Image (cartoon, rainbow, N blue to C red; front, side, top):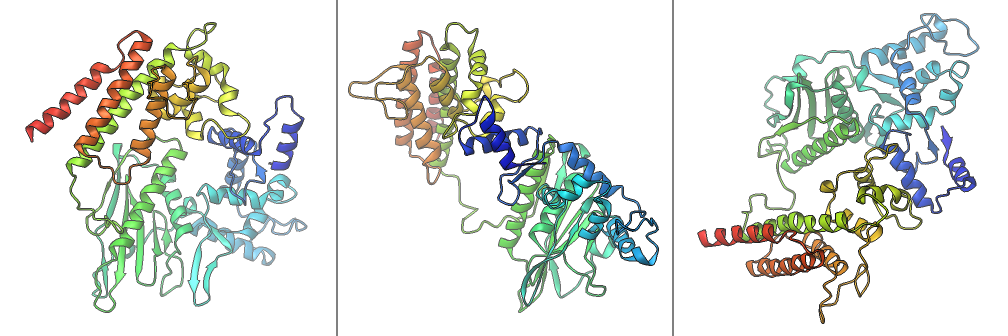
Length: 493
């Protein structure tokens, strides 16, 4: 682990320096995304950078594989945790192995200062990273004094206690009513357990784990957990084979006997969002189908979900398709045919300009997603395929690494129409303007037939200008094909 201040100092002393702190932060986040380091830019974690991710893996392995022969007191050479001196640690070790409860005292006993001085020194930072990665979760509880954060962690991957049948399949109770189960069914009948464990950790961080009324113990088991959503609702999340189930149960109060549909909708979105983040972070190309009854799982807060799709919505969809396919392909053709003479192709030009594109002082040219798309291998000399670049990325590349000159009015400004500037730079700027107005400034995703026809005429004019400048057919035939399809649809109606 190295401090952020040291990295800043080394950067200033280097021969090739990153001038702006924002650029340095972007560079560190890029290395994190590629798995080279572990770095989070949030306030509580940004001061320290873990240079070797394997180091944290080894720290986790020490916790998981710990045996009951670790001295609680470094001065005590005894390894018998059953002795009176170590009775507390023996109990905590048992809770960790069976219930997934990890206390700070047990961490101190495993990451001792003598055997693991580096882990002991950076203990707090490592634990916070494990929380950020949803490996551990610090549970919360509520009482009359407000919210309380517990002084221990729950580790879902360590749970051994089987879930009682009554938790997953409760008996009918006139005082309780439940939703149908929402099911996340993973295709291929394969669901890696780390995905479920990390989802549980995310839920533990979001909601308090429910308590058993009789024993006051946490209702968390191997493959199942129950959460208190509020005073009247409980969420049960469990895993069976390749399916993750979620069910919300409501206490019947004042003749209200159905779970809050808006709450159900928020829970559904939370689970869906976190599953997407978890599978993406783990690098797993897994597909799943989310099956949820409507109602109550699909209530839309403040919007009429049953509103019909209007012709204006369809016009907008057709316009977006034309923008992405026809105008996007036109920009690709411009990029592929306009590069400096000494180079073999545009891919070589992009590699030569790698530092300019990724580490420009001041405002970054590219965001993290664009950098990953452009340079999928951070250590290699490979550039992503132009066919995968969207209009925004194509515009940046044309403007910064191609030989296309700026329009008369300059970049990022509307080109002249009186007289009309027909240069490639002007056409590129017009397509950028189309993209911003169509996909960036639409408030309702609708456009009239006249509005669609007006945009179609603008598209045709720009494509015609590009074809004249390049001296070849680019996308006019595809645009005409799409226009005829739209006309035939209107005539059929």
